[in-house]
Amino acid sequence: MKKAKIGFIGLGNMGAPMAANLARAGHEVTGFDTAGTTAEGVRAAQTAAAVATDADVVICMLPNGAVLRHVADEVLPAMKKGALLLDCSTVDVEAARAVAAAAEDAGVQFADAPVSGGIGGASAGTLTFMAGGTEAAFRAATPLFDVMGQKAVHCGEAGAGQAAKICNNMILGATMIATCEAFALADKLGLDRARMFDVVSTSSGYSWSMNAYCPAPGIGPQSPADNGYTPGFASELMVKDLGLSQQAAEAVDADTPMGALALALYRQFVENEDGKGKDFSAMLPRFEARGRSS
Image (tube, rainbow, N blue to C red; front, side):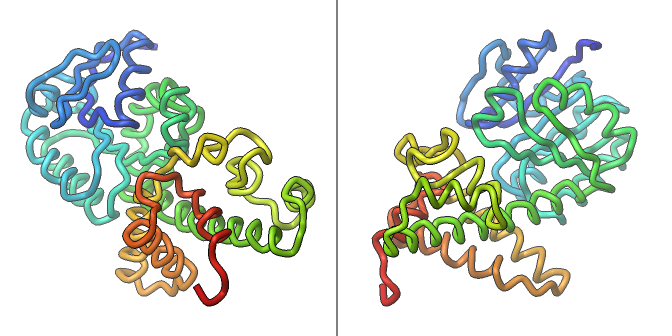
């Protein structure tokens, strides 16, 4: 694999291990984060523009679309023609498409490629990338996807990666709530959790939330439930993603009542209960402690 000069902007819980994996693969990686965080094997820069100068690829892992637009305004003028701006953040579709248009005007390739797999996947290099952009941009990014992840899907034109991520996480939020409700109901009906898992995980209730990320401690494969619900994927990030789903649904007049209810429940959990800072599967102890009139 050809070694590239890579700029990485956003060295948080996800970005830092992704950048470190690229450096371990032999790429020359320079990073920048407003919080001053660093990553193993990554040279620190003082500004986003400095990261972008002469880079073959600039990768972003940022909190929202407004920050992405701001960073793009700073880095695009510093990037060389034909370089690739690869945004791995989860942002609104409109922001991704706006940055794609700005990149095209600057003579820079662009792909939006949000990820699935959480902090564990970022560290292990087993993320899944959902990419939007041109075929050429996807091909340019593929060797980097191969380092940082286990799978990359080209979903369509710019913004399609964000659309796929938003739809995926709307399903995830709703199914995790249903899984937690079912365990809480099983408890009150006197059904053993292990026996419930044995039945549901091999029948029509099968889901990723049940089989791969079970919210009940000691049941199924290791998950954040076995570590006191330490994220994982934090509940406040689920609020963000479900909010993006409802923003997108409103923009295209899509009826998504389950997505809207999941957002309302997670927002209540984070803002009014004790969900902030906990994994999104911590909905299970929430439901355990509640009755129908709670």
